[in-house]
Image (cartoon, rainbow, N blue to C red):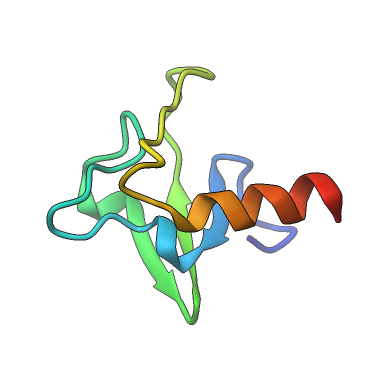
Length: 72
């Protein structure tokens, strides 16, 4: 996301984009919300709130990503 992008556009790691056989981030099943940007994805987030859920059993990549965010 660049500085001029709305706050509802999130730039996240490419592994987060749903693939066949893996459920999408809660409330974000619509493919048009996701766009690839190299090894990252832009996500047009819905305005529902904070209850977006990701099943990390289907996205094991999330563990290393969260570890890097927390530990640095």
